[in-house]
Structure formats: structure tokens, C-alpha cells
Length: 138
Image (cartoon, rainbow, N blue to C red):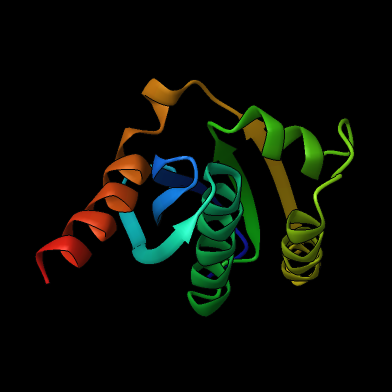
């Protein structure tokens, strides 16, 4: 894309903690047009792993779409603050995923991560839950 900033929303869903997990991510342009969306069934995981995996899904989608400047919106305050260096990552499984996130972020010209309330992340949440529902139906 021509260097314009796009907005990435991602969310992880977990039915139980741990439980069946799903990841969802969606990318919008500045006119609220959907440029990309993705969802993935994650299997048995924790809610934090689902949040991390959802962001990884979205970052990979952004790279595949050729987007170079991102504003990332997460309803996981923990993940947003960990990416922004305000909180440390203590869990070993999350450290591995955080390394992958940082490696992906390094591929972009700019990435700004912000925390939003859950009500502002409904579409990504719906995609994450749909991934779980489709797995259960299949």
C-alpha cells in the first residue's frame, strides 16, 4: 500500500481459561473499509495465548497485504502494556510469542499499539468466536 496508516484490531477468545480458543483480526482503512480479515481456531489454550496469537494473525495479515504503517487496537490491556514496555512478560510461553510479535513489528515502518475497551473491538471478537464455533460445528 502507499504508506498510508491502516488500523488493525485483534482479539482472542477463550471458552474457559484454559479452554477452546480462537483468534480474530481485521484491518480497516481510514474510511472504515475492511481491507483484510482473518480468524483461526487455536485449540486448547489460555486467554492470554489467544490474545497474543490473534495479534500475530493480524500482523501477518498486514504484512501479506503490503501494509507498512499500523495503528493496532487491542482490548487486552496486559498485551498492549507488554508490547509498549510498561509490563514485563513473565510467562515462558508468552515470552516466545512476544518475541514473534516483536520480530513481526520490526518488519513495518511504524506500529503504534493502543488499548481500547472491549466494546470498540467487537468485529475482531466476533471473528475469534466464529473460529471456535466453526470448529465445534465441523
